[in-house]
Length: 282
Image 1 (cartoon, rainbow, N blue to C red):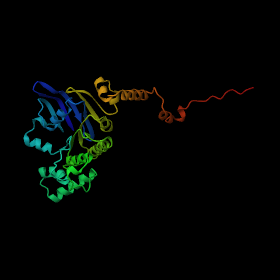
Image 2: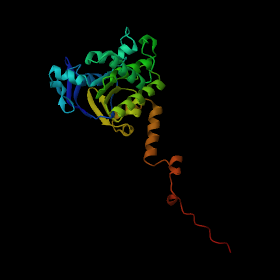
Image 3: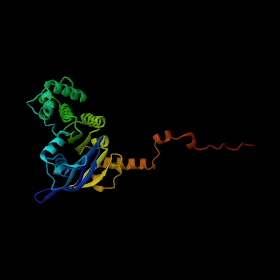
Image 4: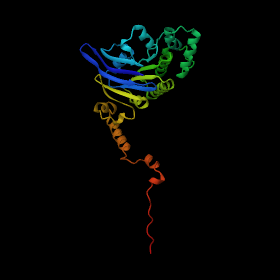
């Protein structure tokens, strides 16, 4: 698991992360959400070591990453997969070469062994027979899937995804969401996702923290989020009057104030009202 304790980070006199703590578990999609500028990307960069926190701890399976020696950090980084917001593929390399890049960097395996692994992960993301294609020949969704394949090629224990649905249409976004969830559950990875996509939140939000001005404003899961009492979170989720009306209707349904057709079909014989026959007419 990954635990962050009281993380603080400033740039000059501006505090960007202000005392954030959270516990992110394996086999779950752990989401960091918030408006642009809320600090979620800086928090993720602190977690993977791209930024050094001013104070606090980042614990990987109980070991503080922020105080590790260089070689110890390298060992942890070998267990981290990263899906970047723009996929960050090398334009001059083929799909096969892009996915193989971490294997060449961190292992001494033969080309044949690495190629077998590359083909395995490309099949996992449904991109068989794309080995020799270049990024310019791929759609946005395909690039994301290549990015995921590269992120998992080393069998990571931890997967970080920065805005995985950025620039994608809703249908393709759902494909990416389900792929991330399937990989997380199958390999019991601790997955951390930065997003402001509410479809992703409702699809994959096993654990969610909502960031506001560098602080953790709320935490919970996708089933709890629509009942949040945080006004800022509600304003973030239900940005339109239509969604606010939908939320009010959902809350009424959940509290039993509206009897809908679904509820009626769940009644048992014991729940049915007793019909008293009228008295016999004389």
